[in-house]
Length: 332
Image 1 (cartoon, rainbow, N blue to C red):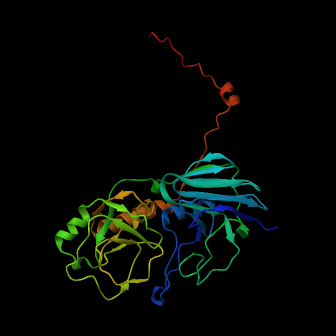
Image 2 (image 1 turned 180 degrees about the vertical axis):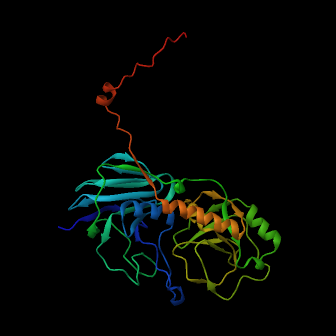
Image 3 (image 1 turned 30 degrees about the vertical axis):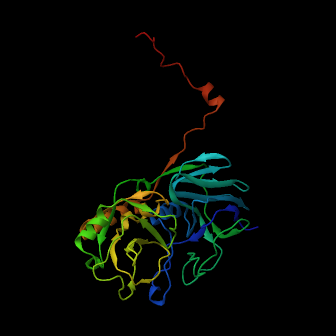
């Protein structure tokens, strides 16, 4: 039997993603791809994979069949367990035949990526394996009893390893953005209100857009424009004044003015915010945005470092240690 990854359980929004379906927006085809590209690349490059399972807050439980698989996990601070043993939020591990890997929402983060070393045995759609659920392009969202067959497998590590990827670190710093491309549709005081507000991720947020709850932003020149292309992270303001941050499954074009666009280096931090969490913005110029992107992807290109896990604490390991070697007189 070919090696497979069996899906024992999957919450909503668990999909297959690669880097995206680019170059087709002029035909109305959305890019899709990962919500957090930096986390996706940390997992796929560590495992030697061509795609990954994007896991939402509903979690997933996976089982290896037919072989020991090389699996890497990276993303938000999820609860990750290998046959019940806790794993670091970012890790590279051997998933032995019959072993179970469970991911559940942890303290923070909205998305996590599971990459299986090798190549999945299904053909790309329009040059990509990315799932876009609304249009039906790519593989269907994963559900219990699905199985992913691997055409090729990568050699697994001998033991679980932690992945140190500094660019995955959470931060409460303001999300950086550049104003525009239609900032002139808003008066200066409205731009100031947008930048000075404390926003909250709305409950109706999804892979298409994050709804921002806060003050209504009024238009100076009306809210209808000739539709133009939109980038991930563009923040458009529809007629009701409630901003929408367009994400991986965004529409190819939009007809509302876009007050600002989140810079590439901060898209992952925005994506990892959960509904109900707060955020603020800080405007930067193009030079700072470009420098931040270069620094971010230089770190990603350098790759995550691999570190052995600490020995598991057992009775035998405690008895083997000298636990009294540093004892001194309590009166000293």
